[in-house]
Image 1 (tube, rainbow, N blue to C red):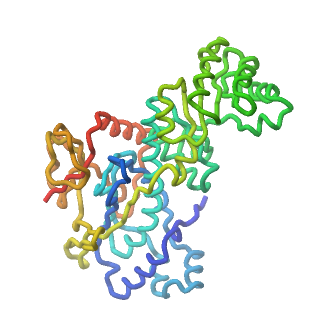
Image 2 (cartoon, one colour):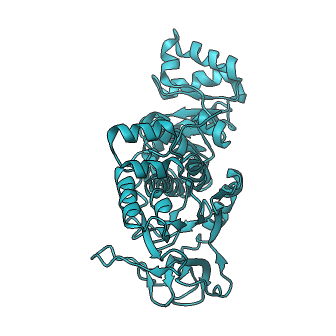
Image 3 (tube, one colour):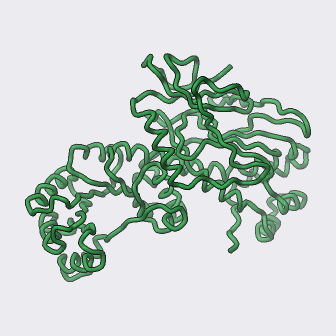
Length: 435
């Protein structure tokens, strides 16, 4: 089945830059672009890199077919020479990237694109659109998982964002440690485990709460989750136990003072003999409200709005910057912006993750107050030998235009958990610059 082109999921200026580059002759010049963030959001020691799998899929479909060329011609976006060039566009360069789920900090070269200037510059918007969205979701999910302290978190934000963004968010959240998602397309496309029972409307459509509970148990079995706060939570729990018996899987509470409600629910369930019935809470949760529930007898959380919308996370802040360029057949030379507040470091970067024994050398990041071992991204402008004990952070994912198959999502999820566990002791993750 033919998939739709992703070529117009881009900004107008990418094509006008291409047109100008074709006129001046630099479109064919070898060039290197890097993706990094200049700074992390306030209070964040690191980010979580996500979206690479989606990006590689989108690059496969980055083609200007007859429909795309026809629309560009009709609107006179670019000239005929540029349209002819676009009609045969295929990215033929290389891409190196951090593995999805890997942690990064300000200055980490999470993605490097090497190819002809004209080919590589067209990818900017596609790259940033996907990586900024998914990495922001993954970073927010990481905070939520940490706040949950081992209790499962379900992603349920599909009704709070665009349909495509909902699928991407479910994937990124699962990568960063969420247990499952309510989104079925995320399950079909990416293998994310899915879960879901019922909303308040299911209770209200029946003649009574008892009828609603009985219908759900008949359909899904007693080991289901019954939503008990439509009318009166205490009465709802009693009725849920009457209908489902000792095998009742869980009760869900979606309103009120959740700490108080969870404690009351646990106490009542134990009194009724349902000591194995779980208590799940939902309702505009974020990492702070989940942390506040740490001492409450809660067995799981459902999170939506504060994960998938800007309410719960700032942008990852990735930028796509040219760092070196050269003439046809010649060596590339470093190039860099010198704009105040937006200066860049020229030259293609290489990065390793290393544990530094003692205070680091000059680096970009917050003050390091602890003199003990520090996890760091050691970044060099040349492909120098790695630091002692360091591991390379970039893998080649595109070779001469050939896109490698990404690892399974479960493997990436496990790698993220391992990377995240390195920082459990609270050591800062920083970028150390080599001279």
